[in-house]
Amino acid sequence: MRGFAELFGLRTRLHLRKLGRTWKFGMTSRPEQRWLRNYAAQRYRGVGAIVDLGCFLGATTIALAEGLELNRKANRNQIYAYDLFIWNKRYEARARGKEVEGLFTIGGSFLPEFLRRTQNWRDYIVIHEEDLRHARWEHGPIEFLFIDAMKSPEVATAIASNFFLHLVPAKSYVAHQDFPHCFAPWIHFLTFRLRDYFRFVADLPQSSLFRLEREIEPQALVRDLSPAAVSPAEIEAAFDYSISLVGDDKKANVTAAKAVAYVERGEFTRAHQIVTQSRYGPVSRADEFKTVKALIERKLAEPEPMNYDLPAPVN
Ligand SMILES: C[S@@+](CC[C@H](N)C(=O)[O-])C[C@H]1O[C@@H](n2cnc3c(N)ncnc32)[C@H](O)[C@@H]1O
Image (cartoon, rainbow, N blue to C red; front, side, top):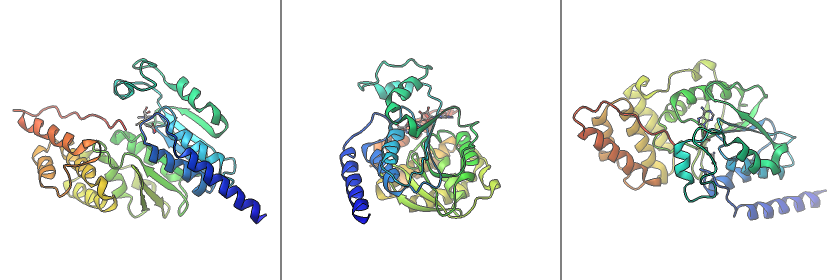
């Protein structure tokens, strides 16, 4: 029996090693997809569902499904993949020169392409074509929640209030894919406010991984995460906390996210202080620090900086 288990473990590791060299088109990197696959194959315990929020064309969903297929503890659990599945101009720009260029129309659905790409793992995936601002989770406990859809404070609050109460203390993990993204500062307010419930456990290739330690009180999840609704003292404390968690490669990006929080409040002078006085930057992932600094300097140069609409994070 032991020999069989060892053989099975060895085959799994060899297979994972081979799959680890593959990459599916999407907005996640090969190391991220590899981490998700390995997690689903080796660490996932089958005590609750795997949920992929913002599954896009299926790159993360497939990585998770490939892992689940190899996991003997999976207990027939599935991956619940949520998305609006609506193509937009920013995705079209990302698709330029790639295998999906020209396949979709702006405002049209890319669900058929998601279905085509994921067809080999059909039994492992439950698709939810819906807006996460209104989604209701009704499928029991969640063991792993991968979040790549907190693109606005409103969606972030909705996800937290609808999904987090189904996580299992001491067993469930949440990965925030946009944690180091400069245009998603609200994620830092959320993780800071929930710091007594979650423990930071790993700095992943892009995401930050948290484990739920104790049951969350529902009222902790409903507070407004818009930068305008958060006090400067809380912004400072939240980003001090986040910067202390992430690795050196992400500190400049998280600093840029802090500056963006002040930009969103219309406080350009404070935002500029952050990007000029920080000990992190200007080198950052995807050059986000310099992008944010240039944006703030453009705003400061305007005689009446009225409009400070910012791009939503794409990846
Ligand atoms: C950056 S992409 C995710 C990339 C994907 N994880 C991958 O590996 O390629 C973000 C996704 O979130 C989805 N999304 C954004 N806001 C949403 C909402 N309110 N409800 C459902 N999905 C949403 C978008 O449609 C998009 O596919």
